Length: 276
Image 1 (cartoon, rainbow, N blue to C red):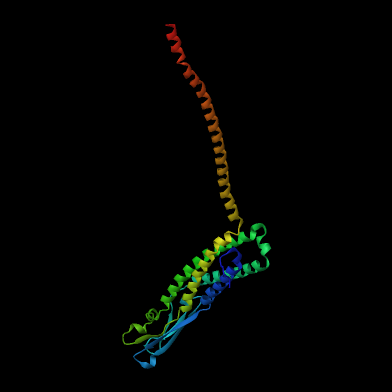
Image 2 (image 1 turned 30 degrees about the horizontal axis):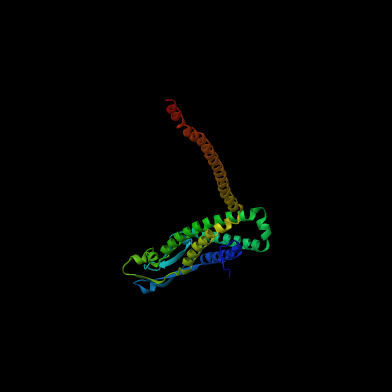
């Protein structure tokens, strides 16, 4: 097992996790089949049916699932259909999972056998980065849509909701019961794996981006202004030092004659007193 999943040198390992999680996602959703069992106990026992099986499966076109129930009014039967259609969200979710599996399988083969071809002209990392971003978005949308679709499926297949569709169950003299409720654990697991796939693909975006030329070019772009700024600062400091030294020298030179002239001032008054 790989020690680092999301490292550039561990891309092959991360794609293996993509393969595994994608398999779990579409297997738990696309391979589902379940059902519920109801019983209708009429006043006239000969008209009762204590074992009414309602089966449904992927892609969850529930409005096409029909079954017959007694009306408790002679031998007449009522044909009942479930309510709802979650096929669009379920099929979209499974389609994303299948294509993610196929791409991860192809990418794993490229990483193992065509590594030099993958990095040639930087085309491989760029394509891999774009596809990773697209699949991250698709996993988020598909998982969210399927989570809502699964919620609708649970409501439509709730035995209490199905019993309300039967005319016999609206009569207080008849007894309608839910014998067996559908098991939704695998469908719940599919939603969990859907969001785990989103986290896995989204977390891999940065590490795939580092393999592209965009990452290296952006670092060069950020480093060049810093180097130019530091060089111009050093050049400005050098000019300032030379200017300071020259100005100091000129100031000392200008002070020299003034001190001599100041020393000659006592000579003037002394000669004047001697003349007097």
